[in-house]
Image 1 (tube, helix red, strand yellow):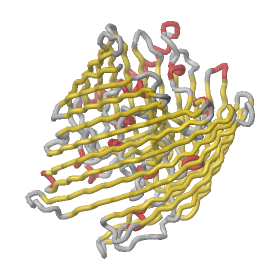
Image 2 (image 1 turned 90 degrees about the horizontal axis):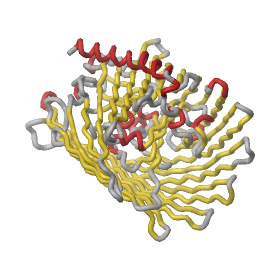
Image 3 (image 1 turned 30 degrees about the vertical axis):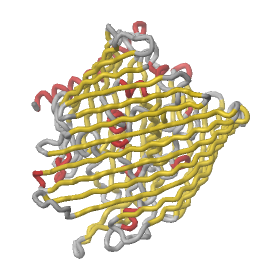
Image 4 (image 1 turned 60 degrees about the vertical axis):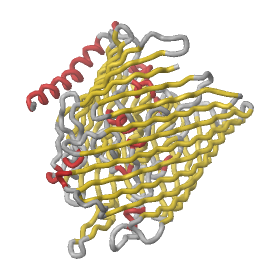
Amino acid sequence: MKSSKSILSIAALLVTTIIIPVCAAMAGDTEGDTAASLPSLVVSATRYEMPQSRVSSDITVITKEEIAHMPVHDLSEALNYITGLVLDRNGGPATLTVPSIQGSDSRHVKIVIDDVPLELLIDQAADLSMIPIENIERIEVLKGAASSVWGSSLGGVINIITRKPTDETSGDIGVSVGENNTRKYNGLVSGKASGTGYLLSASRFETDGFFKDQDTDTEVNNFYGKLTREFGKDLRMEVSYGSNNNERSFEFTDYGFSWDNRNSDSYGRINMGYAPNKDLDLSMTAYKRYFYYRGEYTNIGDLSPYFTQTDRENSYGGVLKSVWRHSEKGTVSGGVEASHGTLDDSNETEKHDSDKWAAYLNESYRIGNLDLAAGVRQDEDNVFGSETSPSAGAVYNIERASTLLRLNVARGFTPPSLGNRYAGLTPNKDLSAEKAWTYQAGFETRYIPGLWGKVTFYRADITDAIDGVYDSSFNFLYYKNIKDLRRQGVEAEARTAEYKGMSLSYGYAFNDVRDLDNDEIVKNKARVTHDVGIDYKGPFETRATVKGHYVYWNAEDIQNAKDNNFTWDAKISKYLAGWKRGVGEIFVSAHNITNEDQFLDEIFSNPGMWVEAGASLSF
């Protein structure tokens, strides 16, 4: 098996270092331009739509069309193949998953869905496996600090933009069945009735689990609804509601305990937009969010739980935004936002509140082939105080070389979570925010016909990093601002244009996270990753996608991590003959084809090879 690992790794590198350039050199035989197929507008850099070619930040976009051809079930799996983003997965599908961008902690990543923040008050993180993919239009991943626009985002932003209702009635129905009693059912309907657009989506995923030699059960239920209405040419309204619920049961026989938990996460949102002319956009968003968690830990053989934890969070907030295109060359955007949240944690004797407000202002200006951007945001928080976050960036377009040069400098921060602030026998209420200056420089090019490529160098100098401190005298853990860190590295990505139905992609990331107090490399941070993609459009309306992911975790010895190898997933689908109102599709997905171990902690091992098949109908 070890020799096959090496062969597969070498084969993947040959594919990405030799075949891609060879295909690119066949410029006259390529079909279309890869760059032309990439999304042209993004919102994550400025919170309004602007061409991605004018954005100085490093942004990766996944569209719903790309997601549809991936062997994935939820948001976390769809993000697994993004260069520079690594997932800490606690097992197989639908298990707790949190992200890291360029070596950041999960609490440093801002996660929003249509301007609603999803990170929790207790730990500043969000479980990506609870978020369904059926109602997603696209996902934008901004790498690096974005605090001048989004506030708390020391590592980056995952911005989820949901689908809009269609003008004509349409929908999707799907079902899949796999090993270990794994099943997924999903349905979506969209359209317009009496001038009101509607979109309703529901899905259910269940499995007996994939932990090796362990008994596990998981059930996830999702619902999403959206209504839209236009009042004349200038005024529009949008109302949406999402609910994500899961139940997980794990019996870790080898470790002598079982764990049962239940999560319920829901939010409601209303947005009003007003555009009196083509140069001015105003919008107002209000949201309400509720999160509930209950976990029971039991010694195997003892039916009564020895430890139970609950977490209730109620939050509400609002955002006012404006975009003013004051000239053909320049655009100013600004906004104010505020939120209030309450945490009721069973480990604490009292509830804790979080009150925040912020104001931001950004300017984008074009001078010839040079795009300049500058911004600043002021955040006030009753937990940590205040932070000022400036940023500046530039993009230079070398038209004759089909190349963009990018440079970005930003100040970022992430506040201490309420869990960090109040945990332990001696809570540290004096915790301050973690702060960093971040730098990015790179280029994006289509100079070689048929080949798109991007290289980004990055660095983040972090001060006041929060870490847990164990007091052996009293046997408890508490948190302090005790570290200065440096995160730096490089990312490289390439993608070919389609050639005889086939296109290839490759991503590489090297990341060095270092404790500046002792110049030691920080463990349990992914140091090297490779991502390989092969997409093939075959005859008879068939399509095949293969995804390979390699990670070197540089883990602590106690973790007993398994890494330094590739895992491969594949999906083969075939469109059926179209009917008057719809088209069918059947597919087969194979996960971890080579049956490799790839995990950070042996307690939460990844699944071995497993297969599923399904069918869908779009109308």
